[in-house]
Each structure stands twice: as structure tokens, then as C-alpha cells.
Length: 291
Image: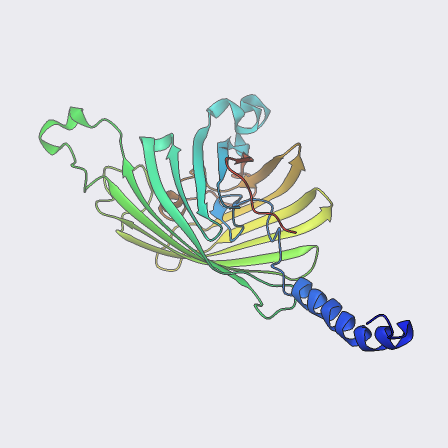
């Protein structure tokens, strides 16, 4: 080796080094697309945005009264708020479990999200695909009903959502979400407008980035098997100090996933309601290195 001229050695090593560089470039292009949405929640619906393994996502959500009360009711703020808080923990980068509690009907949900596909930068995987399933129970005290006090099964409801999303550019992301909700005994236990057991809808979510830390957002959830008004929402997401603040106007006062389909909505415009979410992610263990 000592007698090999440096030029000859470089001549033979150059293809090897070039191939290694190409391999690194290809690996980089096959990386997963990140930040399709700012948070696992987008206005009301869940998104394909995954959590890192061993991280905890906390969200607190509020909606108020309708804007048509005017300044007399401070555009709905005087009417009180429906509040929901949720915790979601990632057991794996593809799987997480969560729990939420809505103030209306003292409704608890246990849910899980599983990420089936994740969009890659080279478009070998052109979209992200996730699934969510939830089971809930209404814990309102119905002892005053005496003989007709509902049992646990009557208080139960279920929700399923398939989420297909794509980040089309650094600015634009869209998601389509077929959804289904099922109430074992919808009336008179649940404070909803619908009287069916099964509700079907198709959710649409969108994000358009306007700066490095903020995006305009939209949500539309048309019903497929009933005459209830559809859910409509528009808002803005803001990243600040490790939090994602989501402020929006929405037609539904309710926040639990089952209630989004069965709870009823006002008409867009004067019957919009002010709402906001606060999202925060906490690391609870050693995170995987990206290097």
C-alpha cells in the first residue's frame, strides 16, 4: 500500500465514495414528511400527525355560545363553555392510547390511534394513513329516573375514524376522514339532536401555512345518513413556546367525537361559536436520535 501512488488510490476510491454519498442522499429523500399538521388535533378532528415514542400529548379544548347574542352576551362568551381535556401517550411511534373527558354529559372516551402509512419525501409513500377507534360512556347522574336509571351499556357509544392526509407543499396540507359514531341508546340519555343509533359522515381538514409558526385552518364534516346541519369550522394555528394554540369559529358547541356527528350544529355565520384549543407535548423518556 505504501508504494501505490496517491493519484491511483484516489482514482479507485472515488466511485466508492460517490456511491456512499448517493446512498446517503437516497436515504434522506426517503425520510418521512413531518408536520403535515401542527398537532394531533385539528379544530375538532384527530389528524395523522404522530407522536414520538414515549411522549405525552395534552390538549384542552373550549367552545362558547353563538355569536348572534351580540355584544350584550360578549358574542357568546357569557353563555359559558363546553370544555374537553385529553391525554394521549405514544407507546410506539405508530401507536398511541388516549383518554378524554367532555363537560357536556360528563362524557369519557378511551381511544387509540394507529398509523398505517407515513408519507415520504420521495413520494414512494404518497400519503399518510391512520386509524382511530374510541369507546365512550356518559357518566351523568340519572338516579332521579329511579326505575329507568340507564345501565352502563345504555350509556355507551363508539366512534371510528380513518384519516388519509397529504402534505402537497410546504404550505398546503389536506386530510379526508370517513367517520362513524354509534350510540347504544341515543335518547333520552345523551344531550344530542339526533335520534339515530348510527351516524356516518365524511370529514375534511385543511391547513395553509402563512408563516413559519402559523397556519390558516378549515374543517367541514358533512353528514351522510341524516338531515342534521353539517359541522363547519375556520381558524388559525399558532406555535409558541412549545405550545400549539388553535383559535377558530365553529358551528358545533360539542367536542367529543361522537357528539360531532350527532350533537347538531348552528348555521355558519351568526351561529358560529368561538373556540380554542391548547396543545402541549411532553417527553417522558429518552427519545430516538435522528442522526
